[in-house]
Image (cartoon, helix red, strand yellow):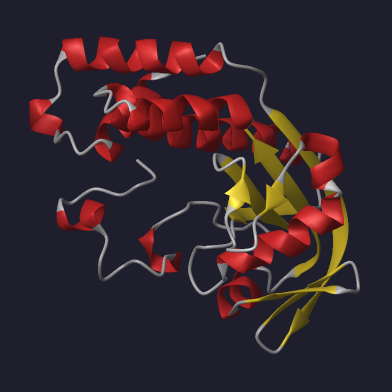
Length: 221
């Protein structure tokens, strides 16, 4: 389902200011979403894992250390978490790369819409997972490597933990890029108290250089 929020988020990623967005722009973006969604199914994998707080990060399942003081703050009241990975698949990457090589004006729209679609699918998976928690357990905000002080390289261990290469075809290159590129890894803490699940700029390491913030917007909508 292509929502209004997805459409507006894609236009934001494309650099179209709110005052300049037309119904024609929105229709064109929806067509791009439809094209991407015809390329193949979204694939994901997840599991619940025990968690222990370290001095500057967290330890998952007794062996995977994920660095980041942001995680120790967010997971302060957690003893376990959900670990997940999701990918739009290689066909989406190929479509974006081909459009770029041909200097297709739609290349920017394809890239923006794919990023927004991946995040929307992750939201859906997040809700599907967390709604099943018992009444005395509460999810934290979802947090991905690459945000705040958690390095992007942490995705490698998450992929290994989930056996995501075999199960959904997700790998990480020697240079530290996920392949397929339009993929997400993330952690959701399971707390013993109500948590603020709102994702905002306070946890992002790009606060000083973010183009969205300079325009009075956020990448999260």
